[in-house]
Structure formats: structure tokens, C-alpha cells
Length: 79
Image (cartoon, rainbow, N blue to C red; front, side, top):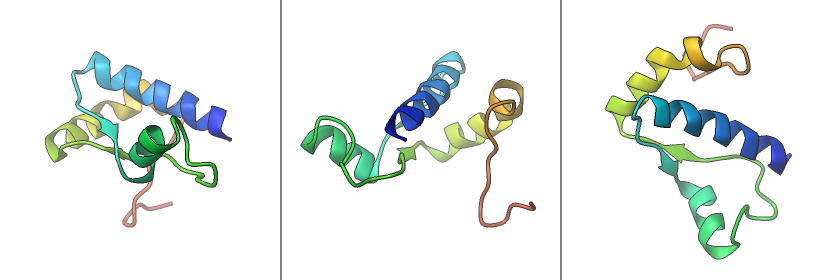
């Protein structure tokens, strides 16, 4: 599972770098990177943070760049 999360992060980072979108690890992912040198052993997600302006930009390019691999959901998403 951790390999899958790393691949997802790599895909997201590639898009963010392409469009000059600021993104960084947050929460437990940042803590794990510092404290464990990687993932927290019992963690099963990836926490990413970005300024709202960059988030909006990411959302605007997501379909073009990543929709063949992933989908975005939120509490207000229609499934």
C-alpha cells in the first residue's frame, strides 16, 4: 500500500511541478517523514496541503492530467 501511495504522490507532484503549484506534506505524512524517515508504520494515507489558490489551480488541471488514473471526491461530491 505504501508503494501505491508513493506512486500517487509522484503523479500529483509531477502535475504540480508542471503547473507551478505549491504542494507539501502535512499532518501525519510530514511527521512520518521527519520522525520515521518515511511513513508512520501504522499510517494508511497521504496528507498533502497547498494554498487555496494552488488547490483551485490543481482542480482546474486535474481532469486533463490525472482523471484517467484518479478521481477527486469531497464531502459535497456527487457520486
